[in-house]
Length: 485
Image 1 (cartoon, rainbow, N blue to C red):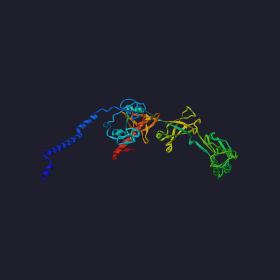
Image 2 (cartoon, one colour):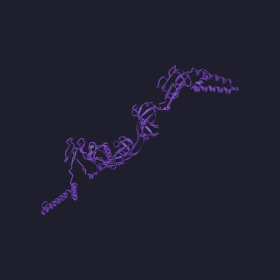
Image 3 (cartoon, rainbow, N blue to C red):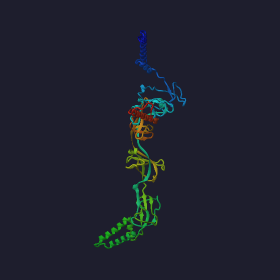
Image 4 (cartoon, helix red, strand yellow):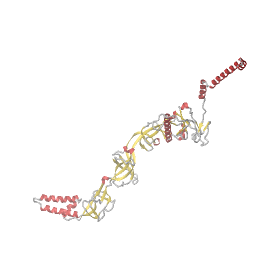
């Protein structure tokens, strides 16, 4: 039993060998672990070496961004000369925000990937989304390098001071002067015996006979007048002499109110002959514009047999737009030209501006008055009207520099180094190809006059991406590799 125990216990040399192997294994394990842990100093030296190593210059097609080469040349697709790519180091651009598709910027991702066409998403940094200098909502300051400016044909022009004309051109329509229209009527019922003016458009003078009217009441009124005249003579010198005079005056006044001329009444008094018909005459000189009577017709005081219009002075009606309404003032002189009288200029002035605007056309009527002694201006004739207001000095830019952004108007100002800032502006008078700027720009600044629609699109896109990045920063992070549409 003792012998078996002695045989199972290892000898002293064997025990020493076992301890040595264990110790050697521990040393090897610790050494391997130390070798696997990266040294901070060594890691820093490697990062510094990588950062300081020069980046190889690459060349890219401006029309096909997927074509990138390490040497100068031409694009195999369109044949355009490749341009040098700018450095995209994050330390120059700022913090990396996300990646976006170069062909469809609305497609973004949190990790590098390719779009449906196989093009690599491009990185977007904080510096690209700041929009420094932007002063309008939904717009942002953009930077466009010189090569891209040449590619899109971008041009600028300086804002200059100049004379702003107070003239305003508009289309005018000749109309009758409503204050020079007279309607002829009768005060007693009767029948038309003879018509002296028998068609519309005929010119008449004041006092010219229009038609004769037979009326039993008119005949009775003449007889009453003769009876009153006889009664007055009978009472002459007596106590009732005044009563006879009052009766005669009442009969005479009745005939006058029926538009019987004074000469006809005097003739009735002298001859004592009763007239069968009364003759109606034109109250003014002008043109017959309405005729509602024929010979033999029966007419009453409610009828209007004739309408006479004086065309020696006419109105010209002009539609003035809301933006130009402040320039149309009563008393402003005006000139009118027509195709019917080439080379002739009619002089007039504004006499009235309608206080109510037309809700459909957003215009107000301006009424101009023109002399028309020779009847050259005919109602419903069209002509070009030039309203001559007082001019002033102002700031002018080309019409193409102004973009209508809906509720506001925008112009892009060149800040230098390829930067273009959107400005909200207020426009005034348009003079040919120039437009007045009332606020937003200063003389000497340069504004974009060509390719500004492309600049506007880039500005809106940049502002939208900035808004998306701010919205994404305020919300929990999406899973890596997910799309944001």
